[in-house]
Amino acid sequence: MSLVIESLTVEHGAIRAVNNVSFSVKKGELAALIGANGAGKTTLLRTLSGLNKASHGKAHWLDTNLLHAKPEQLVRHGVSHVSEGKSVIPELTVEENLEIGALWRRNKKEMSQSKALILELFPRLGERLLQRADTLSGGERQMLALGRSLMSKPELLLLDEPSLGLAPLVVEQIFQSIRELTKTMGITVLLVEQNAMGALKIADVGIVLNLGAVAISGTASSLIADPAVRAAYLGY
Amino acid sequence: MFQLLNTVLIGITAGSIYSLMAIAMVLVWRSTRVVNFAQAGMALLSTYFGYEIIHMSGSYWLALPIAMLAGAAVAAAIELIFMRLLLKHSSQGAIASIAPIIATLGLLGLIKSIIGYFWGNQDVTIDSPFSNVGFTLGSHTLALSPMKLFILLAVVFLTLVLSLIFQKTNLGLALRASAYSPEISRLAGIKVDLVRTFGWSLAGAAGGAAGMLQTANGNGTLSPDSLEFSLLLAFGFIAAVIGGLDSLIGAVLGALLLGLVLAFVLTYVGGSLVFITAFVLLLVVLLIRPGGIISQKAGRRA
Image 1 (tube, chains in turn yellow, cyan):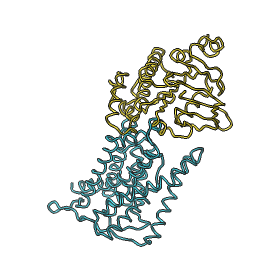
Image 2: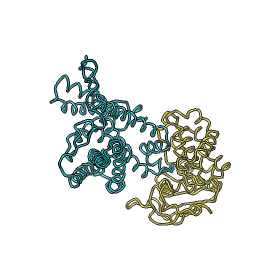
Image 3: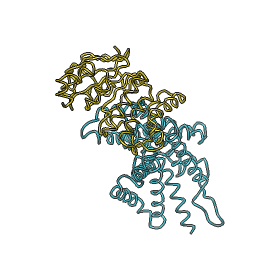
Image 4: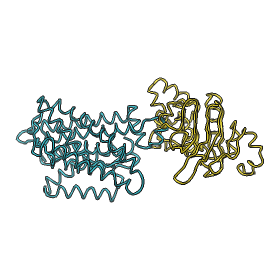
């Protein structure tokens, strides 16, 4: 096991957004974290990347304790978080948005290598390098957000709702890219999604969160086949 | 005709010094969203350091960079020791928007008192490194002296260096990214807190330069209650607001515009209307274009 979360609780004032959550994800796996609006998915992810403070519990990625570090430090330990919405800086150009992901590596050569790799993965970004990010379409912005994250050579990728606000065809493309990333680069992914079916289709394992607690977890295919999950989260 | 030329020259020189102060305000605003009224005190303190260096070594040329370094150090210290804590403790509710402003006003008073404590309240003087006597053209004396020419060149040089840092270096990219979106910058691995401290220290250096140039441009006197520095603060702030507070180019344009307008009022209308004009201009810009004279999209590039 590589990402291990034990009895994690996160409180916002009196509200327990995440309540005693435990699960783990193997290295190289793509895990889908699904659940209704307000189930605590985003809070959980923000806690793992150092944006929110945990109240109790433990969370480790390999040897790195995720709960006592700032996001900028966790990036240096291979943990990268793409936050909800299109996580790009609209005022910067596409190229600058990519480059900020690799500034901390202080290595021009590695930076341009990573950039070349990402532009191969998302050729559309290459055509728009000098445009401001706010001129991009929703799908392109999501590609840019993923690209920026990959610039920091992550081992663990935390993705928050990459499908949010995108057209179905574009969602399909983004999900395929995410699947490819894990296969070709060996990146472990924790994918938070409202689009439960889409996420489970590409995932290896699934975790269902309900009211801040783990309701069900298992292989993605077993969750898709589970009548209770189908009724509650997949809508049929 | 000659009067017109001289008015333009006076306006541009004055505007160029305001622009350094405006740039300092913009740098702090961009890095921490604080309107820093202590900037005048910081600039004054830096200039006192410059005065000490001149006193010891006799060299303005040594004093100018050291005053800028002192300004950077003072600003970094204020950000690290005081502002960071303040912003953390009053980040929510009604106090969040007012606390930093009150705090910088308090700092302004504190810095002036400290200067009074160490240097006394009497004037001290700095000699200009260049002549303040204008060049002559035939029988006319231009409102451009060797000192004013140096000020113009120095301001152009410093503005170019700052723009290059912002647009061409990784540090500049980190500064811009942190200003636009601290959270995404953190997630990208940028040490936003450190970048903010650096933004303050750049502002401190710009303020130090403004103070040293302004003092050498005027009658060379310094005191804790220097009217010149209060004007520098007021006009630098107005220029920054005219420019939109968020843009370096806007700050420079706002300062030049302000300098020119005030010079024309001074020459053609009367000295007693200068302050009224400055503040009316501020209010008019706030009413008509609260985002500054250059549009948001173009303005946020630099």
